Amino acid sequence: MKKASKNGKMNKVIKMSEILELNELEKVASLIKSGKVVCFPTDTVYGVGVIYDNQEAIKNMKIAKGRDENKPFPMMVCDYEQISEVAIVDENIKKIVHKFTPGALTLVMRKNDSVKQYVTNGKDTIAIRIPDNKFILDLLKLVGKPMLVTSANLSDYPSCNNINEVLKQLDNRVDAIVNGECGTGVASTIIDVTDNKIKLLRMGTISLDEIEKEINL
Image (tube, rainbow, N blue to C red; front, side, top):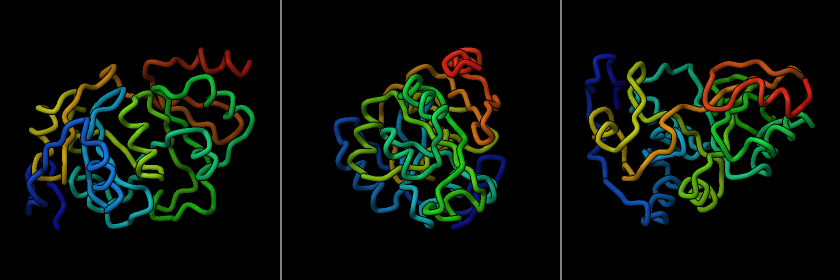
């Protein structure tokens, strides 16, 4: 398979995208577990995801988005326990997770050694979020592992808030698209918590002041 070009065209079609409904959760989970690339609505914008430990699936998601090969994907998990399995968590991070998640907050943390290098493109950090969306949380539980999830759009194109926008950008590039409604339509706040302090990387619906107050900074 070849990489998507910046003008939104593909040199080679991956396959026709299958349209699924929210009540087909088990089928969606089965596709994810088998290494397929699937788009679905989240509590923020439409996302596209794969199981986190399948190198071929990660490659195919990069191809679908026309994404830089060296740029890692963020991760979604279903609970605090899954975070502690893949990342190094201190007391401040624990406070933030329990106060603001599930929700529109992504934390950049040091990864555990058990996480393979291909998952993070060789970086020692990983961006993790617990989404505030029952469908995604149930999907993560059925998959049984974290997923790498990013916005469902071509690189350098606007994020998508409904299935019609996703179809315009990613139809025939992904294996399946789940029909549903997104939440806020605003991407999550991203903070870096790797050095015993908080650094704002992207502003979303949760402010840096709110986070700092929670841990008394």
